[in-house]
Amino acid sequence: MKILIGCEESGVVRDAFLNRGHDAYSCDLLHRDHERHITGDIMDILDGGWDLIILHPPCTALAVSGNAHYGRGKAKYNERIESIAWTELLFSRAKSFCNHVALENPVGVLPFKASQYIQPWQYGHGETKKTGFWLHGLPLLQPTNVVDGREQRIWKMPPSPDRQRIRSKTYLGIAEAMADQWGRVI
Image (cartoon, rainbow, N blue to C red; front, side, top):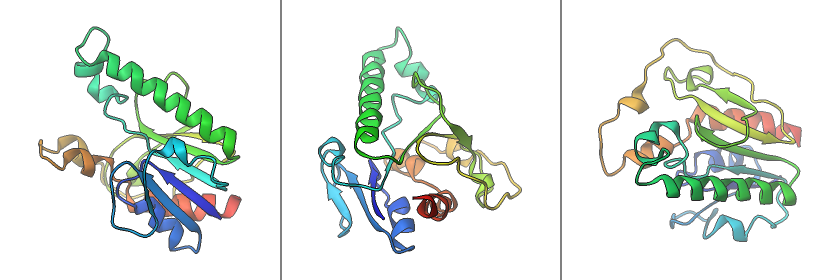
């Protein structure tokens, strides 16, 4: 399959699909030193004949955890409105070019309902980080390895220059479940 992983900085999902023999590429505005990474605007490559598109739009303005800064009446509220509009457009355009699309984001303010919410502890990681998937032409992701432990490691992280990048990285168990389960469906 030809797969596009949009707005993915870490390459974890891309690599999970590559490891299973798929023709997978990540795309992000930031340059990454990897032959399977496209540096550029995701909107410009959605029409590339992809069999599966998985989107990880930036969540800073979309997540409910940002309400103190992005909520109605707050200084960054307009950024939230712009982020919602961009994410809706991204999902809509991806669906117009591809029959199999997943959009991933944490609990947030998107005006359309997620198809499902998952937790890392359902995929082999003893942590909590409720993550939503909005699915088009794909089945719900099934748990693969339910483990004990419900630590909120991500939520408890102290401020740092790398905090946003670390918080947005997809857990390997979830990436492998996507590659195993969605890689067989299409």
